Image 1 (cartoon, rainbow, N blue to C red):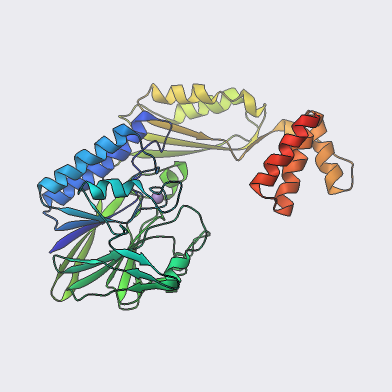
Image 2 (cartoon, rainbow, N blue to C red):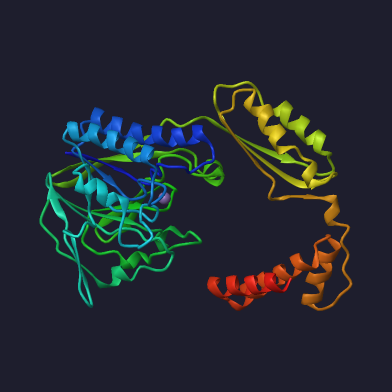
Length: 387
Ligand SMILES: [Mn+2]
């Protein structure tokens, strides 16, 4: 027996770039192809099938077509709604629409989960000698209380799979949203999603936790940080889990350029980039420019740089100047001594109007005092009325 574990497909408008959004769809299509080619018994999807809880009609049609291909081959997909699949109310999800149309199995559909005052009863399903249960992700980053009250109705099977959508503390990432120990015990395979990196074989009880990562790079940071994208193929039999392999998806070649702009003019930086890139067949290009430019930052023609690269064949170009400074930043010398006065003087010298400075002060104060969004909005409106 064999199943595929994938997650974080993010079908939707992840990028403001048509081609990249098509790439994302293509990666999902490759997973479906693999399930059919490998004659998988079923697919486990650990959430974020869509990038938004209200996907476009076109994106829903695309997913429908892919799920129908699986259904024709008798391959079921078991899924939990991810943080991105969930609608505004936290409880509903577009995933349920596909469940009711019998195109996938939503493991958090009301037939599997029952909330009582002090506990949450979770049922799963035994399918092809595997017991499968799971808990959906959450939209907010608040620690999920549901895990503390969880009672799983365990059933006998060759293997037991638990599907979830959280960044566990064991990963050591800066933003974890679930204490690893909160996961229910007694499963053999913990199919994790949410964190887009790829991490194998995290021991937990008698089982293992696995993150396959997203099927495509979902932003510039992921393009730079992650080496490749893929999904797991897991063999199992009456003795439990057998061989596990990580199947690499075919994603575009990528090129990461680091440009040191120190003491260079904007024109020189553009020329240097021009010398470092060359004709190609649809690569992804990320250019990170840092240092101190000997020109105004705004004189760097980012659109022009992108056009230069696109004319050579790059399919997607991202230019990152968040760590680029320019010489105008030195020119501000402040003489005030209180923090509030320094902020005010700095902004005045940078040429901001009294109105801008008042808004900036309000936002700084709001951040410091932890003012709620509603209160901040109310105060901002009051401020504009006065002005
Ligand atoms: Mn995700």
